Amino acid sequence: MRLPEVRIGKKVATIPIIQGGMANIATGEFAAVCSEAGALGLIGSGGIRSAEELRRQIHILRERTKKPFGVNLMLMNPETEKMVDIVCEEKVPVVTTGAGNPGAYMERFKAAGILVIPVVAAPILAKHLERIGADAVIAEGCESGGHIGEMTTMTLIPQTVDAVDIPVIAAGGIADHRQMQAVLTLGACGAQIGTALLAAEECPIHENYKEAVLKAQGSDTIVTGRIGGTPVRVLKNQMSREYVKREKAGEDRMELEKFTLGSLRRAVFEGDTKNGSLMAGQSCGQLKEIRPVAEILAEICRGI
Image 1: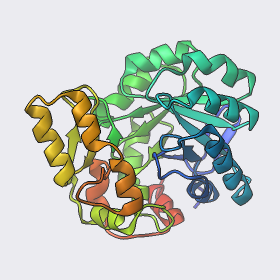
Image 2: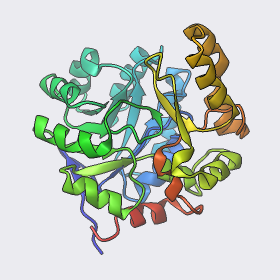
Image 3: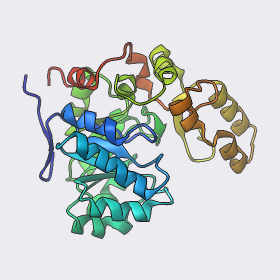
Image 4: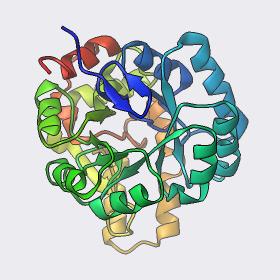
């Protein structure tokens, strides 16, 4: 079977999938594996503490693959200015952005020949980003893990497709070929995959994290931070339940931030399934076994 390509400008992935730029997970090595499997692999900057570490991850990836790749820039990162310089200097082909407006950097990206693909949670934001030069958008529904908006993938994709003339990549709740076919029918040109790749052999999260994802049902996620305006979807555990309890009781936002400080790293690196932030989307209930990246991606693209 020859799978369809996803093409944005001159950049091509041989299957219509972008690997999610998950903080502390989307390393240069993991992104290279995903690119080698035909997707557009992304290095995630969210958990990178220095700009030079991002450069190092780019070099690690390039030692492992010659295929297209990108970098996900979390614009709230205090090193963002330096990271923008680095992706331009390193001639990274594609940049996806989240947690902020990339408008301030658009001119620099364009001058470096970089394709810019922001993540959006609403059609109105997609329209604005198209006007300022975005080459495509990733429309992410609230079924996804990590930071989320309010709209579901089923409603977000067609409304975003109708709102803009640039390509729309779907994200949120896509873990097998049925969901991939659905978002293509809704008008997306491909999908960004995160949660399904947590169950990959090559995914660099702790085995306890993987086991928790495999055991989870779709109803085993919870959204923290909704009251404070920073909603994040994670697996239910001792930490996330306590967070929601404190949030509903009106605890100060700064105190809540202190309570979760370092929780994602505890989950990813230490395998702390009680007090770690186990970010995962609602599609976790579909994940039943650990498989190679290439096998996971082939299943998602089966029949299309």
